[in-house]
Every structure is written in C-alpha cells, then in structure tokens.
Figure 1: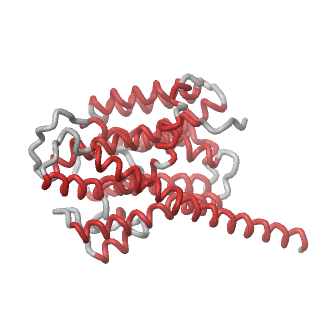
Figure 2 (figure 1 turned 60 degrees about the vertical axis):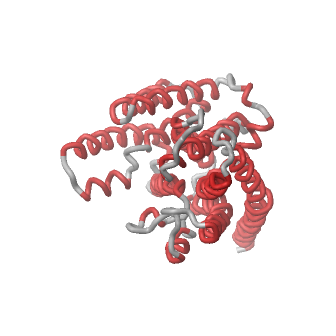
Figure 3 (figure 1 turned 45 degrees about the vertical axis):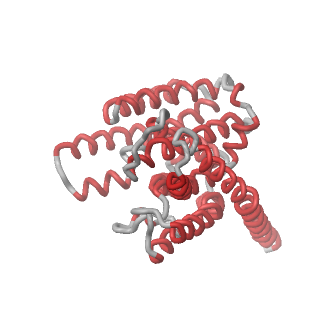
Length: 342
C-alpha cells in the first residue's frame, strides 16, 4: 500500500548530518591535529549519527524498490542520486586542500581522480579526498547487495535473506576474533558485517509501515541482539534509541520533527555530509591561527558548510538530477513507443 512521503524522515536525516558535523568540529578536529581542547563543549557521540544514516538508508532504498524492481532502473536512479553532488564535492574539497593545505589530509591528483568514481574504497592504498567518504563505500556495497538480490529474485524474500545474513555474519564475526585471515577481512567487507544489521533494521521498519507482521518485529529484535553482542555499549544504547524513534516514526508520533529548518537540513544533508569535514577543518585551522575563542569558533565552519551545501543542493545537484531524470523519462518513453509500433 502506497503512503505519502515521511517528512520526519528528512528531519532525521538532517539531525544525523548535523550530529556528525558537530562531532568532527568539536571532537575529531582536536584528535587529528593535537589541538589543546580548552573548549567547554564536546560531541564525541555525534559520530553515531552515521548509524542513523544507515538505518534511514535501509528504509529509503527498500521503499524505492518496493514498487519497481527493475535492476537497470535501480542502478540508474542510484547514480543520478549520488554522483552530481559527490563529483562537485570531490573537486571542491580537493581544490580547497591544495590551496590552503591541511596536514595529513591531502591526496595526489591520481587519488582525487579515482575518488570521482566513488570506488576508491575498494582499491587498497587509495586515500579518500575527504574522510567521510568511507561511509559511501559501505553504502555502495549495500546497493550492490540489493542489486544482487533483485537479479536473483530474492528481494521479495528479504526477511529470510536478513535472518540468513545475521546467522552468517555472526559466524564470521566470531571466527574473526579467533583467526587472523585476509580472506575473513574480505568477507567482512563484502557482507558489511559491522553495519548491515542497521540497513536491515531500516528495511524491516519499512515493511512494518506497510504491514504489521510479527516476523518483522522478530528480525528487528534479532538485529538489536546482534548489535549488543558485537558492538560497544554506546552504540548499543544509541541504536536502541534509533529503533524506538523509528517505532514512533511508523506510528506517526514524530510530528514535532515537522519543522521547516529540520526538513531543510534534511534536504541539504547529503551535500552537507560530503563537504563539511575537510573544508571545515581548513576553516577551523585558519581561525585557530587568528586566535578566536574556541567556544564559538565552530559556529563559523558550520555556517560556511551550510552555505556550501545549500548552493550544491539547489544550484548543482537538483538541476542536474532534474535534467537527467527528464532524459531518462524521454528515453523510457521512446522505447515504450517503439515497442508499441513494432
């Protein structure tokens, strides 16, 4: 059954992006650059916003294929969704780091060119233009798994697939603690043992939103059990909070998140996530040299990152996506008309 878009989901995406940004500016910057942290603020748990991103991604991706499981359509739409903002962000970040320099964060031109493909995370020895890109490797791997499930026609048996994955991943995780092996490391990466349960949680919440069946609750509980067994207590607590939040979401109890600013933040969240880290570090580095108060210094890179993300969203990403979607629509209509006249 089709249901209207959840604006609360956009708000959650915006909150996740904001929490990761605050973590990078208030905590991670000081760790990376040995900066004496005399600030009264810290946001070390903001990094777990990435976990929320993965749950949201599982929900949204399964929602996007629930009514259309054509593999070509899935791949093309993912490319259109991911690449316009990403390519711009890679070029911009690379140029900023080259111009202003940031110790330990620069990459070669060859590495930057490979980053444009978004597959650099699968190539040993290739650094990311920006540190946050590691999560894109996880996302792309998830998309590959979904594409495989579509091809082998298992996407509609996602509950069985999820339980099977949890069993296999648990075995691999346990084996990895006993044996050091490059093969096990590869398998861990291929089936995303550290994070795939979060995508599954998102998928199950989408299924619950469509139809309340016990098996979906069981899979979510099993994923939470997996989380408690193989992850740390802070992650355990926050994933539990995220699950409670999603129960509220599918029961329409998060209406208070329908705030214009949060929805706007969700709209620009992908470009914001892509550009905030290294460019923000450059800004903080420059302001540190000026000697500004460390308790307010982080506000400036936040404003700059928000401005850049807004520009990318409305002047780069959306116009290119609209153009590509029109081209795709015209191409599909042309093929349909040809089939009718054949």
